[in-house]
Length: 217
Image (tube, rainbow, N blue to C red; front, side, top):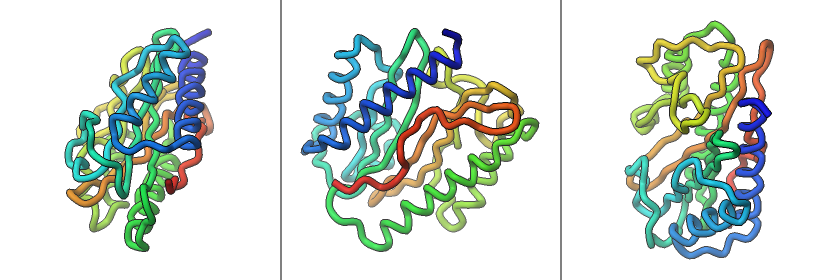
């Protein structure tokens, strides 16, 4: 298997574990979800690409929050990935513990729309910095809540070139494997949707094949 096939397999396994997690979601706090994801990876004799990131409550301003005993309520970010033959995957999906308000659902849809627009803007030869800047424009009045880069390269390292931020010097090339992960964060909400993407000659291929809908639990 080559790099692309290994990352595809890594994404497939990560998505299967996440799907299983969401279907059996009876967790009370962040750490319980993280432990479940760790256990499922261990059962498959796989290493984690990074510590599972589970964020809820008032922890959303900590972009790389360490999951703890915070009770799950409202939005829940679950960001997860395993390594397959040393190659990483990176997927983030959104859950909601309870019943989202109309305004909260609008915020979720905003992030999903920015994500989908970014995918459409992935064209060989374009500058990655422009992709990041366009996402900030697409967030409109919420761009100040988007506090990290739009994405990054994925390979044997979970964060590597090409970089997808407004300072990036990288250009979109065939066979790049990257993430697209727009998100907005405040003391009251946090929303991130992330996929691992392969740049093909005339199209993109989403390797993390998991529905992007808001999962209400």
